[in-house]
Length: 111
Length: 117
Image (cartoon, rainbow over all chains, first blue to last red; front, side):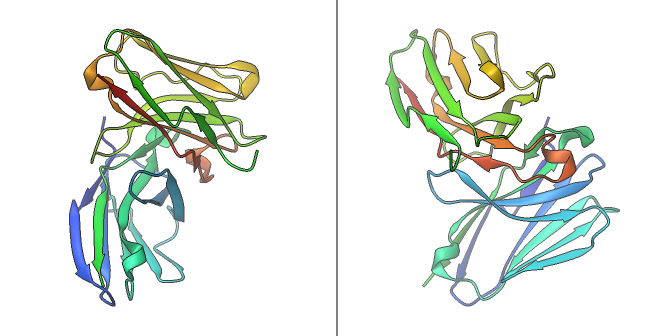
């Protein structure tokens, strides 16, 4: 069953603009992770936020988590063309070891 | 090894043939995952191996799909009597036990692209 769902499905912005992607999930979680996938490649871990955290930063990335709404957002500030990729949120299924991924947001940053 | 290694990187097979996809996880990682990704789609969970526990096979789409993990290391995903709808990228990932719930990062291989013609 689908655990995480991202929106928008696709996002196109100009270089320098900020990009915001959202993720909603269904069950209680201990943590939520964001991954990035360049076209045709494996996924790369970006950032993890735990359920007792509301916001976390890593470089140009800012992640928020609202457990009451079962949602998270990923903000990329001052975007670059190299940020063009698909971004996925992932959550543990039923607080177990299995990670379930959303459908992803395809981000296109135009120079 | 330095990262998760998958082979073959590309495989074209005829409908009805069996295929085997191999995954060599990061040394010492006890959790191993297989996912499937169709073109332009999200990741579909297939199977999860966790240490010596029985694998979670809940994502395998049919009995044509099976996977094993020998000696707690290398894993093989086997698809019997392949169909055209099996065409996808098959991604393997590994992490330190117990994986997702503890917040351990999972590390992905580059995937095996399967095309069934």
